[in-house]
Length: 116
Image (tube, rainbow, N blue to C red):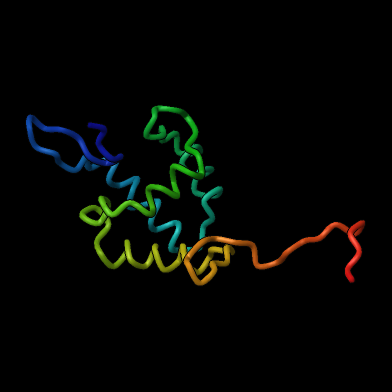
């Protein structure tokens, strides 16, 4: 079993790793302050914070998954977690159809195809 970033196994008990929990809180704070995923990645790299996989640079996908993971509620609190979810939804530029499937809001058509 792989533990989420910010948690460690202490014997048979899963506990919060305070140093990494501080990083998780920072990620949520920066995001809620308006930082993009790319800017957060750059901030983590500048501070020398290794990714969950141990790489020197985080990916935007890793930060995005962290922000969406409910397992971080004990670290950041319900309010900050929910605020991040609303902010993610607000920033999303994807349109959804009635069935909830993502789709582009604009359809592009080749200029070589003539409309009748």
